[in-house]
Length: 261
Ligand SMILES: NC(=O)c1ccc[n+]([C@@H]2O[C@H](COP(=O)([O-])OP(=O)(O)OC[C@H]3O[C@@H](n4cnc5c(N)ncnc54)[C@H](O)[C@@H]3O)[C@@H](O)[C@H]2O)c1
Image (cartoon, rainbow, N blue to C red; front, side, top):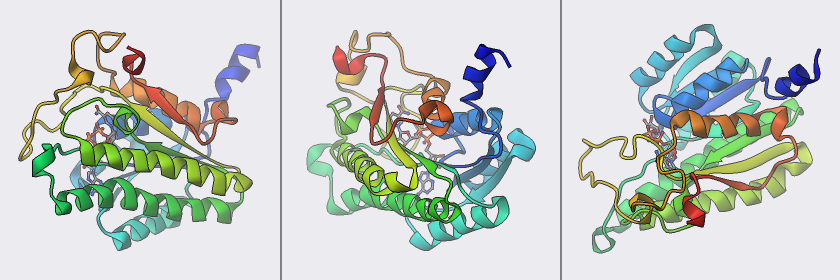
């Protein structure tokens, strides 16, 4: 094997099982496709059962679809148990599913706040806890990548107080889980995207407001455009593979230079 091939093989995932939540669309779908290309068997999990099945069909034998709801603990534990039953374990978790409604400051109610925390924080914690248990049982280490947001670290988009607080909590969960799980060689990191195209992925949903704020101000993104979902998936592959073998407890920003402008 040439030196080049040896280096590239660091990114291979042959024989690994990856669970990607929220993989019916957007960043999760691009990530599932890339991890499957790298050799992993991928569990495509989403509340959108039809969308998950469609992505799994596209990926063929390398993928299986699972329907679940982050608002329901039992649904999460049943989904992770079904993945373990069908595919043997979870070696890589991409904790990606999330919601991002915007609420003007005076319109944000306690129920809205709790819904956001339930999905983006508690639900993601239960997925992480269940997958970490499988990884510990197998005893072969593991990788957990929480998909956070630049909004958890910096001011980016208006009317996202509840969302930004949920992503800051997710990053905090990353740091704490990295500490607790390091002795099992389970590496835990956050990926914090800035703008990802399409910027408003669900423009027709009820109460939708177009994004406004520093992230969409002209000139703030040094690279002058939003990322493609593939440009977020690529660093996720690095963290999931041997290439990311010495990275844990980090919140890695993928924002085209927004946060330094
Ligand atoms: N798109 C961006 O600009 C951007 C920027 C920063 C962070 N993010 C984060 O990236 C992640 C993926 O977002 P995306 O942009 O691909 O959006 P998306 O809406 O295309 O994907 C989110 C997926 O999560 C699923 N989902 C929603 N609620 C769920 C629930 N209760 N249970 C199970 N699945 C559920 C949806 O069906 C959807 O397929 C999210 O955590 C989001 O906060 C996105």
